[in-house]
Length: 484
Image (cartoon, rainbow, N blue to C red):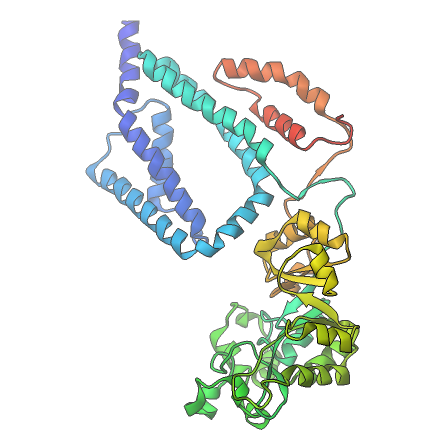
């Protein structure tokens, strides 16, 4: 009777083996989709049902699924696979960001994975002893141990600049306002740059174009449609290049109302009536006005200079025109000179300018060109290269970094400055997120003592102290000074 009872209890779990596999696959794929879809704030009813179903199956209970439940699982599986594939294609350029995020989160994710495997060891052991077929027992045990040992080996290939020895973390990167403070005021306006200075920005970044009558002004886009009311003032010239407008024409445009109507960063509701009134009165500033703000506050300036279109009166002399405005309004040592045209001539004329390049290269090549700073996209982040350049006094600026976790990674990697949209948020960060400081006291001896216990647990299928193996692997991968 006892054997019949044991077979009766084991039978439901074996009958549901196919459903169990499908359910687990659907469950994890739906979680992958929810991870991609960051705006999702809660789990769906189907996901909650799957959690309960996994719990029941882990105890060997038969589900007796209704046909509607089975359809829901299949639909969720198909939707998760399709949506994940579509988002992966749409966000193909963001995969580098995902890889960077693993540099700061992988150690924590690894410990969580080992903890999860430890918790799963008990229901898996229960199923192992309930199965009456040796092949299935070997398969489930082999799969579990393979995943577990793979997790133990993961730290050997894991790298994170945020794992630091105590006292080795450098100063935080300086904050350069990307077109000012675009979350608090319309980009490339005097109000935006004043806000950037007010909330702690140590530098100001912008884009410079030359008007048809030779006045350098601030504008990022090639046309005026996005950030001005050109469609109302000059309805027949909305597609015209911004550099083909005279300075008098540019001064007729409003450069602030679009910010209130579109609310690009969702910060409009936090603005006061006084701030709204100031925003509505913003116009396109000239380079001279921008430099006056930087000079008066002692801030660094970084600007990208756009060559006027063919046929423009200043198509050839735009660099000389811009240099003259710089000399008239600010100390050259405050300017990170980014334009690559005629760099040697500009260096010879004004050696005080901080020559800044937008591409990496051999150290010797950069020093021969008098490059003092690199302005690179954040996806180019490499702690080794950053330190290599700094060894010859070439600092690194990364753009555009607005998320605290990405700023934390740049901080740990030794980046000297970043261009950001969120100075008001990052300036309050006192230490990097996900920072792991190794204590000076060596714990390796205690970890070695735990190894026989861990191995004994593994042989018994239920590892009671798997987390200590994980810690041991971290210790082996990132040895402290006392481990020699």
